[in-house]
Image 1 (cartoon, rainbow, N blue to C red):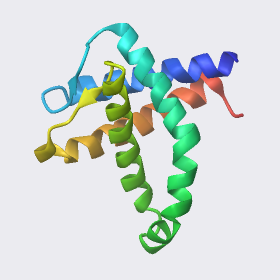
Image 2 (image 1 turned 90 degrees about the vertical axis):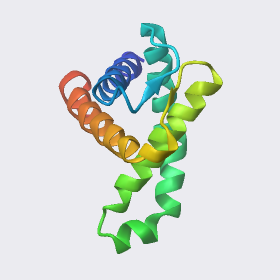
Image 3 (image 1 turned 60 degrees about the vertical axis):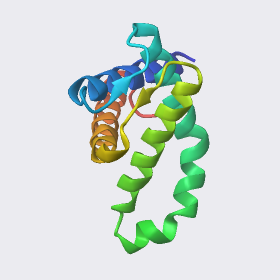
Image 4 (image 1 turned 180 degrees about the horizontal axis):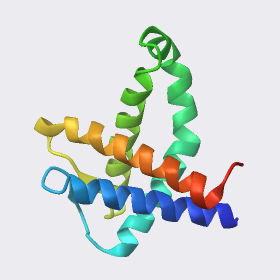
Length: 124
């Protein structure tokens, strides 16, 4: 249970950093600290429940692109996290003409989450 809380906090921090770095192009619906905690929880649930299904379905694309298709999967899951967050009034919005920022946000969140989990949580 302790690892769960650490992962939510790491995801919240990673999402905060990504949204802060890409601020004019990613707009947070409610810019409060608890909104990032809720968004970190949603992000963790999306990665736990939906990512394995999407990875399995997109396996031919991932094999065809030699693994680069996972970047597309991460971008879609990043957008899904933002949309699910808007349902509970804690998400973010990316304008349609700047979807590259969703890609960059997904990269930032993936990198920061990976490093944070290695430092604070360790190997499971």
